Picture 1 (cartoon, rainbow, N blue to C red):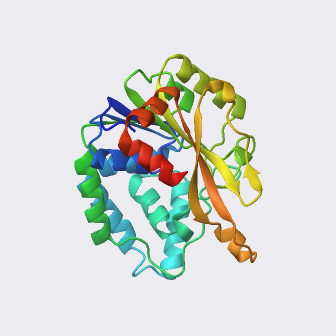
Picture 2: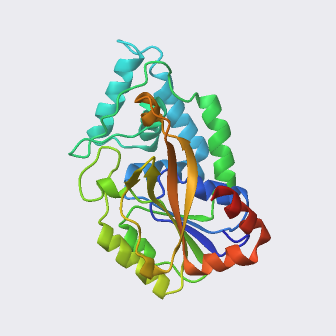
Picture 3: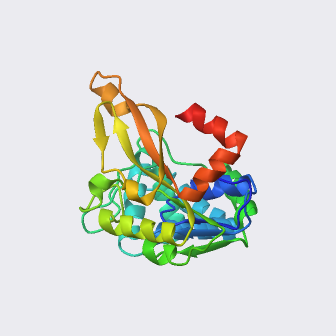
Length: 277
């Protein structure tokens, strides 16, 4: 990314790690966070705009597991049931994220949160959460737009001067329901949307599938788009290690045409790409 630009847009924000990192480095003062998972966006909005209220609500939910009849695991299931019945407040969503196995969201075929609780821990303590959310709020409060809509609607609002960072669901789950994602996307529709960004001269970065050992996940984005593909070494595959193999995972990163020029003209970027390639 350039050192300074107009606005960062994340159409598939998840927990908005890239937005937080960019805000910390002060590369821009304007952000657009979007994810189709509305409760997830709700957590981010509350953390950024009302951190004290979120802390108070989270403390109430988190503390409930200490004296809950039946123990902490039963408390988790109660909160999860309440959430799935419609009480999808930010504190409930955040507690489920903090307490579930590997901090990883899982959904049923009907869109119900169905990940199990981690039996080894109680989730992020309110004191630790306090440090995190107030720092994030300091970075982003008053600078961020929040939406929960189709990524194509977000891309249509991008303009020259923006950087769009996209980390869409893996291609292997785009056309089917998958428990790891609230919703998948269609490959051809995504390619059409990227093509439109190129046509409008919008700068973007895409994190999209990759390889593990001899296996490639997903189809490359078309060469006709004129993108630069870089493979990032993500380390040894934990799944392969369980099978007695040592295979390195590489994640694909695509740069839009103008960002390739940034790389060529920036010694800092050139050294970075030489290292990660």
